[in-house]
Image 1 (cartoon, rainbow, N blue to C red):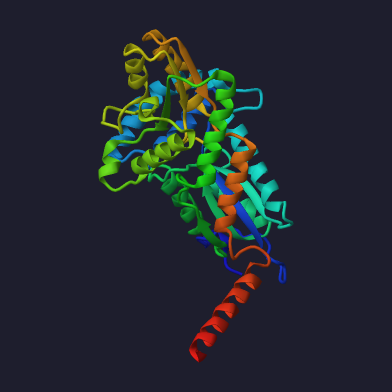
Image 2 (image 1 turned 90 degrees about the vertical axis):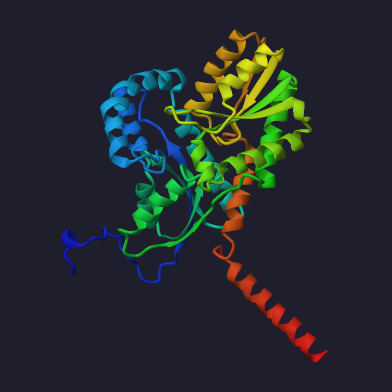
Length: 369
């Protein structure tokens, strides 16, 4: 037996000969502090903002800024914001992500397939390596990784994949892995968004203008080839079409800037102020890039955005919640997963073999003709 202390690979769960492998889905979101305290927020921000995918400036310079300035000043203010949206169950992002994973598993298992579905966070507790270890211990030999981000970005989606690859580098018996890169234009995702908004309109009425606010990223990422901006724009167009909105009835913006660099424009809060100042009285804001409500939606939009719009002369402001655990969204999420699980589920190989035999017979018939 090799000396585990000198091995670069971690300890594997016990291997049982003849045991059939399980199929699993790992649903990955960004992460959250363990509590709305300065200490926990500082720990969370240190991990999040240390990711080179998130902040792409020279490493040594950034770490000096991060530990010398940001982590000294920002955690207390951020903790107060987290406290304003914290629930008895904990962080809203954690609550909704857990419920989404539970709903996903229920739908995947509805047809009798013993598919596992778990959630993980890129930063903080419930980490991706921790959850992958747990899935292996449960017997998973095939794992589909599904980010909670509909639009692909190097700052989010690719960072999730980095964490999976880093985990795999220390694992001896690596499961088969698949990844979902994006679903920004998936019809079921777009329709789930549209249905959620229509439901709110039934009680709130239609606004003068609907603003679709996406999380921002530095503008330079667009010029370096990141598809995020284009995918946000496409989601916006498809959602506007599904809702039957004219160009003057909706807009698209980007929120959550960090630092002084130019980020994707237009910015959300200035857009709300400009609309109010030019006569728009009733605004509703939806955040299609967030599948679960979190600090950026519940505090930045529902509180700060509301304050900015009303102070600038607007009269009605409504934040429309994220998809969260809406049944139509969970159906869509299950459909997206099932598409990428093809060939892994029981019976898929038999169906594939039958299809291959049918193609062979068709070719043979054609040759005879």
